Length: 182
Image 1 (cartoon, helix red, strand yellow):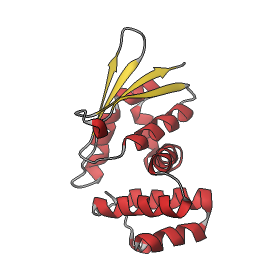
Image 2 (cartoon, rainbow, N blue to C red):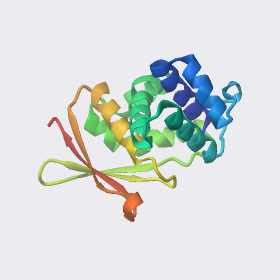
Image 3 (cartoon, rainbow, N blue to C red):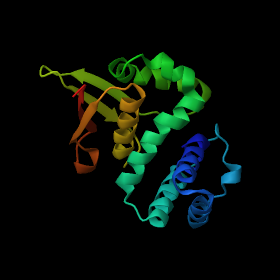
Image 4 (tube, one colour):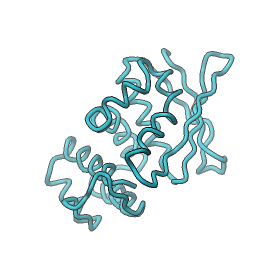
């Protein structure tokens, strides 16, 4: 993953727990954050190592940390780093979710070899929608849940999320049932 992700993890931890806690996490992970370059690609193991170290240091489970980080990503990192792209994505939650793949295509212009996830929004007869999330990376579905929570806040639209199919349980990909405005 890119250094931008690592910087965002650092900022999320520092924002909630302070510099000293971040230093302890970086030390535990064996990471020198002074060399994180936003546009540089790092092995996924570096990212997962930071997440594991943060969970140990903060005494939280991985799912909780990933949800908090997903929310932080939307409400802080994305606004600063991708403000115009957030606007490009849509003016409401539903249009934004429909445009996630297009937004990742725009991001890929700046990030060489980006291995972006894929999102597909499928409308259901009962008024809900299914969000299909496909990624080559394992274990990030709760990050997506956090992203959705952050987007709900960003667009000031209530959102209920139910994880109905999980790749970790053997499904081909993750599927979330969304109820916007409920």
